[in-house]
Image (cartoon, rainbow, N blue to C red):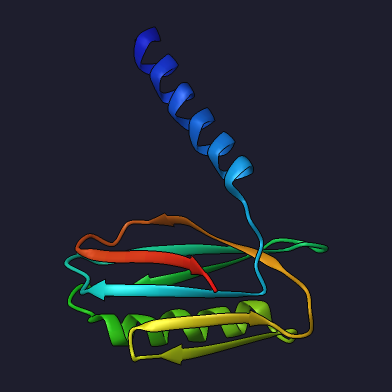
Length: 125
């Protein structure tokens, strides 16, 4: 039992540490979706401006949803969560572009995804 708890604690520490050290804010991000959802699940994204409070967007994805529709669901959720100050749009059908208005930068992280079969990639632009 102690060994499992230790391993879980180390794994969590590694995730937290890597997120803190790898954060490289940008003024524009691309979220790429590939394939479709094999199961119902939830995608949680976090947007953290260089100066400001982090904002999370939680998106429920039904099983069988294809990448283009997933991009639309994520785009709509981000627009609602972020409100003003950001431009969120669909690109190439299956990509979501997120840009902060003005010259500010922000970090975008995939906090979690319980959707199986779907590939999600975040890229700085």
